[in-house]
Length: 156
Image (cartoon, rainbow, N blue to C red; front, side, top):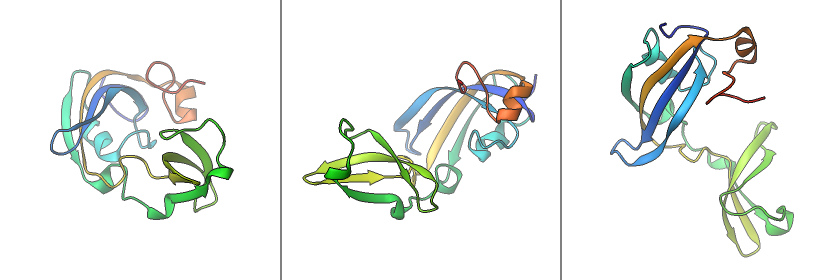
């Protein structure tokens, strides 16, 4: 089966800097066809391909996680900080648009906690390499939910 709209695609992938420094690797499954489950440039490169296809794509900042938004960097008093959360942890907060936003705890310094709502790889160009491991027709439920269920996908 070839990758087309409403197919569930499983990839083995690596993400590196353009110079080759490893950043992430693993397996993922996504719903193909404009559901915003994967970078659009990667989705376009996989269109029409089948299991076994491999590719490596250089992603500019805007093709990856986008530019950093310094308005998502916050400092809050430690007194407002929930107990038990440490550097590397995450907090749910409210973004600039009033919508829920996840903030990463990047530093705790004296009475202050430094938070960052940007994706950790925002502002970076990346190299995305992948191998298509499997392609199958997506279920009606997956299409309705706009994501793949099961192994390497979303679990309800």
